[in-house]
Image 1 (tube, rainbow, N blue to C red):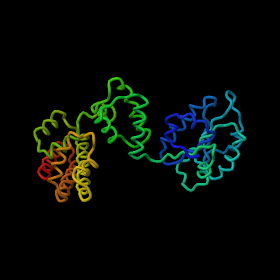
Image 2: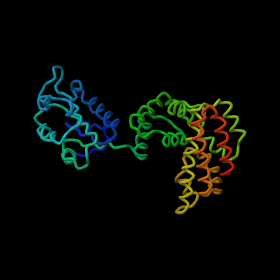
Image 3: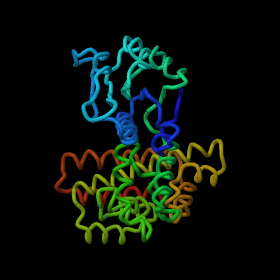
Length: 324
């Protein structure tokens, strides 16, 4: 029987009473987390017993027949399953053990997967790399379950900046629990989730296109920008150049407002007007020139890191001359 992994994460009781689970896909962190949840909801089982088809010489059938000294059933996690496992699993009705099969890398046409997909009493759960839609569902579920308040701009900042690795998402979201009483701001997210950076690297693209050199220099001096932070700013510039380029090309199919809504980060809604003005003045020649400026600056940072502030300042001034 095919199940969605979210039903396990939400601890849906009707999905946690299966005797055997096949967790397959390439998202190792998700597979590990689901295994722990399934185990935690079967408290009559003993400690977890791991069996690896590549390493263990013990016959799996003997292991399944063993009784724990302290509990009714064994809880067995099978790693690196092979197709031959199908025969043993088909006889599982004879055993009392609860089984989770961690099928990392199992192919879609695997006999084992097809068997679980079609079995009415066993669970087949796909655990593939997360996309933006799945990440959004995870975030929404976490915020709702823990009643965490967050402004609209903070929500979109979180959604558009968080990693797509499952365990990293879980670890980052857990940090928000300490803020649930007062609500979460963008400043909180930057400090807690994104390496506690004191600089706002995203400001520098807008400083450049608005030719706000005074603001730019004051911030670089006041924060005593490090080499690492210079790279962070450079990478932020590259990110916004990518957004600018993508939005410009999208104008062939959509209106300017539609293209901006589709490509520009929602949490930066206060910068949307500046971005729109930049887009109006833009063409691919200017965008390519700007990419060349950033590329030269990146090369200079690698070979002259002691002069990172000067390189950064020159890059931002040159970008302003081209795009403004």
